[in-house]
Amino acid sequence: MKNYEKIVIIIPALNPDEKLLHTLKDIYDSGFCNVILVNDGSNINLNIFEEAKALYQDKIHILKHSVNLGQGRAFKTAFNYYIDKFKDSVGVVECDADGQHHIDDIVKCADLLLEHPDWFILGVRNFDDKSIPFRSRFGNKCTSAIFRFLCGINISDTQTGLKGVPYELTKILIETYGERFEYATSILLELSKREIPIHQFDIQTIYINDNESSHFNPVLDSVKIYSVILKYMCSSLMAVIIDYGAFILLSNVCSNIFVLTYVGRLLSAICNFTVNKKLVFKKKGNILKQSARYLGLLLVSGTISALAVSGLSKLIPINLVIIKIIVETILFFFNFYIQNNFVFKKND
Image (cartoon, rainbow, N blue to C red; front, side, top):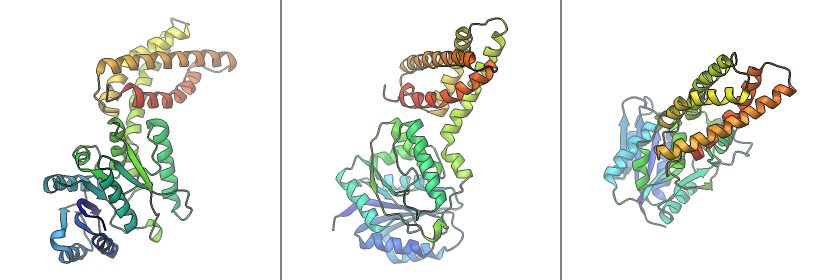
């Protein structure tokens, strides 16, 4: 059995049941010495926390939120305590309280972290497994595809709860955006910005009673998870209004599509660049280099748009503005990918 004294287990819990005690027993029986358990505003089954404290005493560190603050905040509370109390630790392993992570996978995650203390580790589920509830399969596959295409992040399970986090990285993650389920997404984006490698390993997929214990709200939490993309859409919409306004107004005095396109792009560029840099991608970097790359994207995107609009207007007898809307919708995804992965690079 390996020495797990330098690994701390973090478990956020909201209204847990007996499965939490089974998980804790497996963890301690496997040789782990310290667990940080965060009671995130539970209002039922409070005896579970009392039982855990009575069983494991100084081996378990129970932190409490008076009200439910969310999974992201629970991890930040745990990280703050961990950084202060475990300065000689290698890192933490995060797992769920509802028994969805098999102890063999928790152990494997800890082993990988001990062997590679600079890795960020994800235990990923296989979503081709038909036994997984449909909403989980569909949601995770969609999110993974979107992040792979738009953000350049190739993660097969963006919402996994099993993670291995090096000690120094917890200091970064404690300041990462997000309080609830969107926090997991923000972490991946933060790692991408900082070009920190992510190691993935396959884990067993366990769903108990069709995952009915999950506190995930498919609508509200999905909006939060996609918040970065939504902010980009709002920023792009604002730029589009400026761009289209100039295009429509100037079309009354100028018939050159290239001139109309470039002028519209130029007027919206300053606003769009500032908003995307400060609020959407939040990447500091070198502003001169980013401006130069943004200008290059502006010229390339503008040229593609002008050529496409000009060519389609000769082939399709419909309003010019409608053609432009179709072309710009396609370019929206192209521009997001280039801005996130090339224009607003953090490490210039």
